[in-house]
Picture 1 (spheres, rainbow, N blue to C red):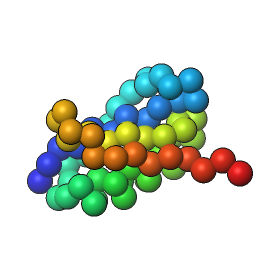
Picture 2 (picture 1 turned 135 degrees about the horizontal axis):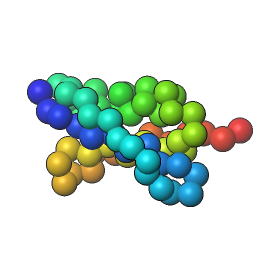
Picture 3 (picture 1 turned 90 degrees about the vertical axis):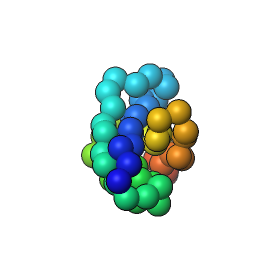
Picture 4 (picture 1 turned 135 degrees about the vertical axis):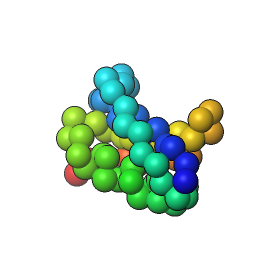
Length: 63
């Protein structure tokens, strides 16, 4: 299991907090990023890290 860090970014690009979740794979981490984004309604994107390695991000789609 890997401890991933999830950073929700606000519209201005700032980060006010982070979440840590232990998951089995990068793929699971990217799915979790979508859930974190949905939970943080003010966030425009969530960036996922494993240490100094950026895994990816989930971006809010604006209609």
